[in-house]
Image 1 (cartoon, rainbow, N blue to C red):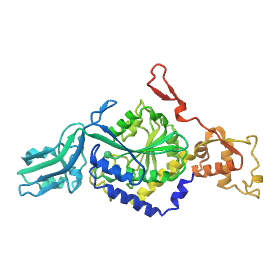
Image 2 (image 1 turned 180 degrees about the vertical axis):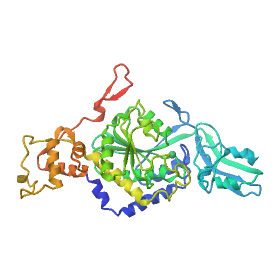
Image 3 (image 1 turned 90 degrees about the vertical axis):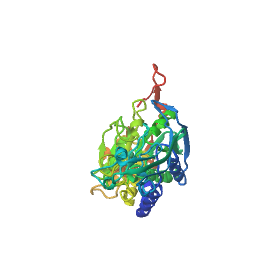
Length: 458
Ligand SMILES: [Zn+2]
């Protein structure tokens, strides 16, 4: 499969502009972990890729959690005594503490003040705050704006509903030759925040769109879910199905100008870890690998000890380390078309390596096969061999059933794509055969003492 070569034939500037346009279309929607904002978002993604929407009723127990009530908001404001809206949800959906219960009262500023969230160190930015699991209400505003509010009474209104409803998520399943799956997961629950939320959504959608037109070795499952509770709910409903997940990536925060970071899986030595490390190393010197930690995005749920799935997390700047994180400054200017296109390119590189990474057997293992007579070696002796031939020699030497192409790429220091091309040439010349591997589900055993506990035998 040559996804990357196909991708690079396109006008990448235009690809980037397309990704950014889609982010701009999604940006105004007031999303949350439940409600019409996430439904609308999923419908817009559905306009581009096949998506199956699931709804799970409030009150459903999912492991140690319960699916919360559904929240919807229609309007919110703070009016001064002249009737002027000094804080207006219509201007920014970040102004409302996400999941605020409804309120309509008049109160003095002194009483209102402890309901107002600001960031004094970035006085022009509006913070993004939530209160999903404790019923509360509040407003978020620029600190400078707070300073302009004069003492006196204010009319405070949050026109929202919080009641029995559904938690909504979307799945795009692309069947491949194998039932083994690659899981790509991104959260879709943040309101007008561009990097933390929309960058992952638009890149994942574009990747799914591209893969939907290809013959695939693996099956792919793209999840567009509310953060934390969405991943927990999906895992609770797919407890047995996860045995098919062979590799996985959480995509988040991939539109900003920061260098790439890959957070390893809990196991730390899975194929997705090796692939991501290889692709990043050959992509840029500033890319960094991070060890697993139990804090971050939904890799926390996929890598919880009961599941321990091979799911890593790809991002640019790490959450919480840049000042724009969870503020109104994480806007459409913070994500750039070229950065989105570059992130998509990196994801395609990772997928291509996963698709092409196999073990081969050298069918002529006793001494080097004569490449010259097969037109696989240069004609004149004496010169230094080129990368192409070097790659062929590496592949032949290490294709003993033990080493994958990625092992060979790492050991030789050559890019995976070069090694993969060499394997293709050698195979079509009859010098290599593919070693078929058992499917994920067949590599699984169940504990005799506890039949519900499942472990991957690798
Ligand atoms: Zn976030």
